[in-house]
Image 1 (tube, one colour):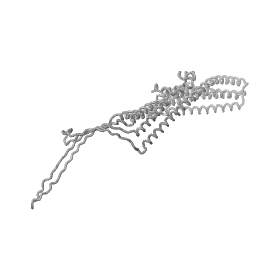
Image 2: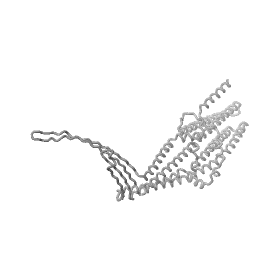
Image 3: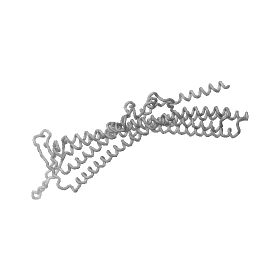
Image 4: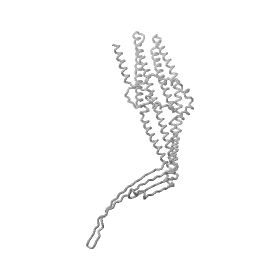
Length: 448
């Protein structure tokens, strides 16, 4: 009967595993880059920026218009009566039809507009490049957010194993205490204490499993997947993750000053902010063009006739230059210039703030990564020491020279050490990705 029950459980576990979908980190990142709605909106905005560049080039070209018209009119006029003494003669009504045809073409070309067209072209190009860089930065952000959410799941998954081992140990310990109580070697107080610790371990396991399911839900929601779908994740560290844990941030990247230089050279959001500032400077030139005169060239050609065959017999051709000199524009140019200058100053402030933010984020992440690396080494030693201490406490308790409280404390320390080790491992892995993100070197292209 026991054999049948074991086979049935194995079969159910196997069937359940077939229903799960394996989700790797690379797959998660690839899905995030495909389904992120903010990324889709940014792609649409990029199309508008490209159209603006095309329109800016059009400002250098003349505008050409063609026209054509046809008009038909019909009139009927009643004859005027003529009096011949006693005889009145009324002539028949007269009718007439007229047709008019005309064809024309005209062109207008701004020869000088106060350098507004040049500044507009430069501004549109800067905006386009800025939009491209913002799109790249958004992709890097999506990659990092996915990494963070994914490793939160893996971290909680490993913690569940730790808590399950703790529950199993407490169950075994309770059985041991019960057997010793039957032999009269311990009191009921030890049994009750063992029962309480087993219950606490089970509660801790329930909370950890709940944290795991919550982290899974957060990840699947961010990826745009069904949160009710059952996905499985890796149970062990990959070779890349093991290499990360072996390396030290200081030896891999160097000093913080070098990191800042690398970040300012690679960060797409920083490059985008520079272009935004340059675009704002172009806006000042555009606004200032309102003070300058505008020179416009115009050409026109028209022909008209009563019959199509007579077109081009009567025609007009004109060429003109128009110089428009602004004298007073109700302070509108002053206002536009003031607004453009304020916008440029704000963009400069944003650029300076971003520079300080980059330095702060890099320094904080660098220090956190170094601290996490040291914590990782300490927690590894703590696990080994706690494991040995637990074995000693159990041996003493079995020999009657130790108390159950000593054993429970030793097991609690061992569980805490294992928990801290798991947390420090994945914290260091995430911080490594975060540092790459802040450096602007987080690769997203391999996931597209």
